[in-house]
Image 1 (cartoon, one colour):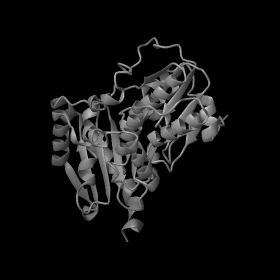
Image 2 (cartoon, rainbow, N blue to C red; image 1 turned 90 degrees about the vertical axis):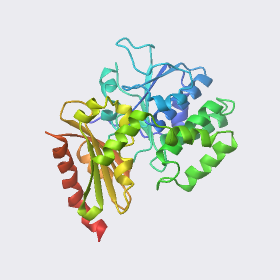
Image 3 (cartoon, rainbow, N blue to C red; image 1 turned 90 degrees about the horizontal axis):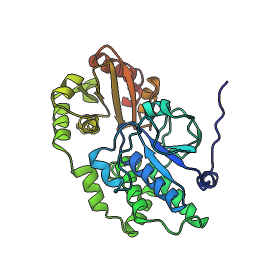
Image 4 (spheres, one colour; image 1 turned 60 degrees about the vertical axis):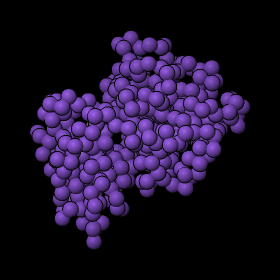
Length: 337
């Protein structure tokens, strides 16, 4: 029997958040600034209401994003014995259970609330999903505003506005992507007026890379491949290269920026093999009216029309590429006419 999950209004969500329940906040693997920022901003809002909360993920916070935790918590990895006796679980920025990794199967019970902004995925809990939001962090800000109006918190603290700004800036590519809507821009202006150091946050997000990350991007350039007369581009990073260079998963998050930045490319994807197993992580981007989320949904993934991801099982990384190209070719020609 299919479980019917409730769609929450913003007021309904805020009323639930105000319930004094020890809370576990979880977010997706291969975490980005939207996931980490949203989780820790929500944790701070709950703390302000006297509600204990703990952020958890199947992956550790990447080094370049640790400033978002700001000393409020150490590791986000859970030991076999959970560190808090939680009464509810809230997920942020996670469109499907598969994005939560091993943590999802380890939970003692189901997720109670999911807060997300992705247009496609698999709903797995009572939810508030705003696909018009540029980032989940944008939703967290609206939650904070509503809690202020309800008298539950007295103002929005610096820690929250910093996390929200980082989340929105990250998911819009520094306000360069199509999801940098007027609403998102107005929010950014409001956050800067409230005291966010936008230049420093953007420096940490976009202009500060470890040597390992730069080496990974160098390999992505070497392995760049063009298809469909240069309108589709891919890059492939097999596990053998990852192991040889001693790269960690957190060093591979910007591989997609290489194929998507090539002049004339409309559809880009990056494939990385994170272990020796035949499992390949795919990131996709589109610069035209081509829905990459539909491609990723075929493989159990999801995301947005112009930015999505999935996991593909294949005999080799070339086979994984062939599977993605096959689905692109089925759908791309109408967009190219």
